[in-house]
Image (cartoon, rainbow, N blue to C red; front, side, top):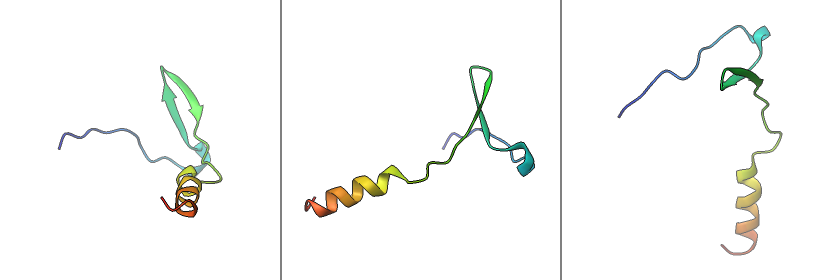
Length: 47
């Protein structure tokens, strides 16, 4: 399985960021995982 290094662990004070085209952007964790909303909807509809 091909693999590559995609990040690094840093001190928490540095926050969570990703880089897109050389620009640092803040990585914000979603409050609610959209999977569970879709799963709940499908389950309630019998799918």
